[in-house]
Amino acid sequence: MDEALGAAVALVNTAEPPETLDSVDALRAFYDQWGYTGSKPASSAELAAVQAIRPRLRRLLTADRDAAVEQINEILADKQALPQLVRHDHLDWHIHAISPDRPMDQRILVETAMAMIDVVRADEMRRLQVCQARDCNGIVLDLFETGAGLWYGPNTTDMDEYAVRSSGDAMDAPVRLFTGQTDRLAWPGEYEKGTQVVVQHRLPLPCTVRALLPQLHTYDR
Ligand SMILES: [Zn+2]
Image 1 (spheres, rainbow, N blue to C red):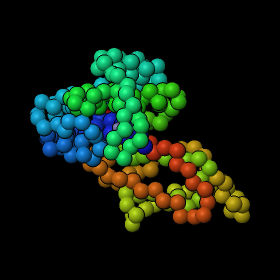
Image 2 (cartoon, protein in one colour; image 1 turned 180 degrees about the vertical axis):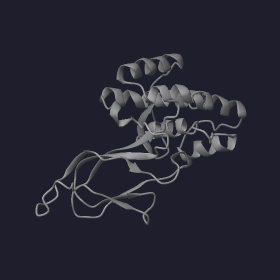
Image 3 (cartoon, rainbow, N blue to C red; image 1 turned 135 degrees about the vertical axis):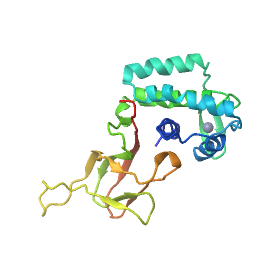
């Protein structure tokens, strides 16, 4: 999963009642969890600012392609984004478009907009799926030519197998390699609290995971 988009989805989800981004400590934990760089938030004003961008992020993440373009361009202009190649920590050259000493809310907006550029250019808006159900907590795996034996779960001891064989397949024929998106896989635990998902392939068959697609809660319908 793209780190910036994953963080944006998680951030949007914290706004769902009950509010879970409810203290500076919670914001600092969020900062650590998603490996942010730059100044670490320490004040309630910074917390309020980050809380306040969530509706805007949500609009962006759930927009159709053309509407997303408008919002991306608006954010980049508004925050005077300036793409620069940087190398830091264990990361090779990559683009930052906003200085690390700008406030966290502005950095999140710009980083999300930058990540969305790739989604728009690749015409992969469907990667950001919006779930209709209020209690929807899940992910979808985008697989390429993947054989039977794929397991997933919140940790290595509590995993379920994803059935790539469908009931319509002949039992005496080998299971065909599966390409496409899985059904929504339940994701036990709460996404915004840092739940991880483990994906394992346990058979000597090909497996390519093209994307892990988090699903957004929707709560304003
Ligand atoms: Zn970086």
